[in-house]
Length: 285
Image 1 (spheres, one colour):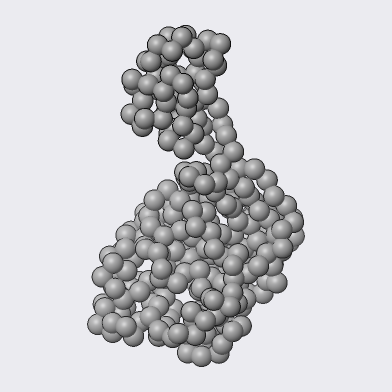
Image 2 (cartoon, helix red, strand yellow; image 1 turned 90 degrees about the horizontal axis):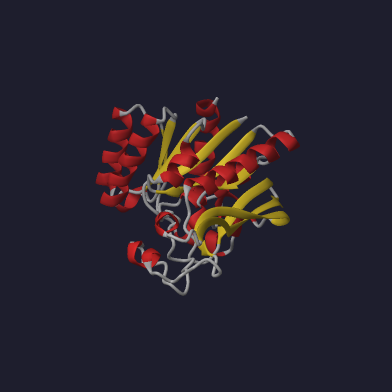
């Protein structure tokens, strides 16, 4: 089973657009949206829901009113202003457990609560797994891991040998959970200073996890000098540069139409993505 993830050091580089086109080009594959804080791959691929389930990840303090003496020790010690002698704020509670230890009457306990929903559905290109966090719910790499585990279960159950994952931006625990034990990380960047800086951080993370990498420069023509610097950086790190894609307004139109770009248009960007996908097979193997 091969697992390929698209990553970016920052948001807005186009990794979901790239992954959506790769899904269309791959055909029969398993898809996973690991950008659980802002999952939007479903907008392009339109999965028909087949199974849903609760995600229980966060723990919050719960008070037993019968044991509480309203002494205020919990409120005095909480650094997040999440608890008073009357109530607990589920949105503010970090689940650290200090209030539980501080309560002289043992009136507080930590309990796991529902803070998201897991979805499994079928797209035109194969089954898809994604998640949606509850409002104000805090994410962690654990939810990403659960999404990946579900995708692997679907792949084994259906006999599919490829999982394509849309990862989150940045280098936090969600990015690490998306990246670890994958066969190839496709880093999508843009020729801005922030794009260059944040790409370097993702490369460092992938190197630490010993994950093979490849890169795509999106909107390369908006700053040719920076694009050339990115290409030079990739060459210095032995990172294959799969494509340097130009800026085209048709990409925005395809996303607005909620259609993978390679099925909406056959212009330079689509052709570049097709060639990039052909090269990926050799790198991931």
